[in-house]
Image (cartoon, rainbow, N blue to C red; front, side, top):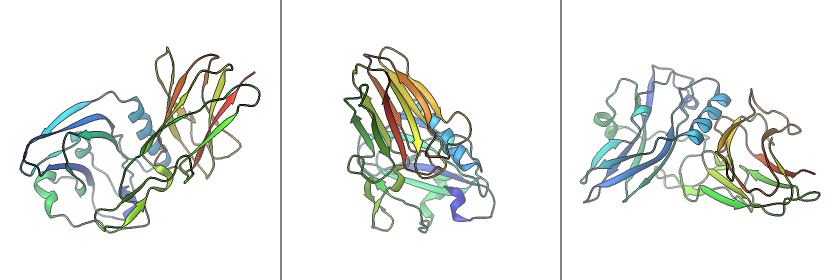
Length: 273
């Protein structure tokens, strides 16, 4: 989040560099990624990133030679110039075939990243969470959602027994860290067969929220749904309708807590008569 550091100079760029320190080539498999243009509308920017990521179909493989070779993980990210006070929010899903060192760097927008990144100083800590967190993709199954008493709720982005804060560490300082708000983590919620139709609602619990969800009903194509369609949810008495699952159907809801918004949010599954 470039804007939080208070820099008032010229445009910068933020890039991801992958280094292979092993003795054999490795492959970086990009499952999908999203790099929307930067913006000063922070809540809308977070929603745009989640929307683009959930809808993305841009898988690619990159080979990193052995012996300390480096490459840019996402070239389109390296091409983005970010002005002071703008928010750049990228989401990248990648797996590696061997251990790799991944560096997130910020440079002047006109710099040659691969020629310049090695001598950069570490960015000082501020109040935001920073680190590498394992187990950030979660899967849940909700059952028993049937009329009249089967309403269920999942709170997303809070440190709960069901979805605890991801724990990890800050490699630059060696400190233990936790990811409050679960920003960027993926929650997949499976809804098995039920004797009732079910409405899916997203309700804010801590202030303004604008995000997206990907909803899949068995036998139908997945749909990415804005939550809400316009502006932001601001009241915990108002929700965004993600969809309705018909009777005797199964479904999956995929959610990523959106950057720039307030967490937690509640996913409500409400059986219909």
